[in-house]
Length: 151
Ligand SMILES: Nc1nc2c(c(=O)[nH]1)N[C@H]1C(S)=C(S)[C@@H](COP(=O)(O)O)O[C@H]1N2
Ligand SMILES: [Mo]
Image (tube, rainbow, N blue to C red):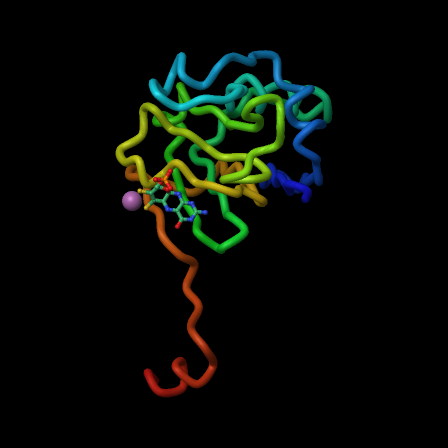
């Protein structure tokens, strides 16, 4: 299963877990940042900079937020300043994740444990929106009929 990453400056890329984690400069056991949780993680922000550099995109501008979406359409939107300790868990016991595959976000500095999104498959880095608070939940799944009824 691929992970699609959008940088919101017009670029996007599909990566496998192996491609993402091999680009990441900083790997460690997750329990160093999230006590009690086993597995290997890589740091989000240093991965982000490596990814932008690899694509030769100017990294002078930091994103203002990251948004992620999971296989089950659970989403989280997180201000960049809550992501300093954020990591992606990608391996447990040397194997792909059984829970949270392909990768799971952990946000130790975040406002809620609900931001630890399992099974992330889409990532967006946004530069222009303003958000002060993190949010999470299931994507709106309003049918056309409901939209008509609410008119
Ligand atoms: N993909 C996905 N990730 C998710 C959720 C979800 O429903 N789907 N729930 C979130 C919420 S509300 C919480 S509290 C934690 C629960 O993590 P756990 O399953 O490891 O206990 O996962 C978060 N990540
Ligand atoms: Mo939660």
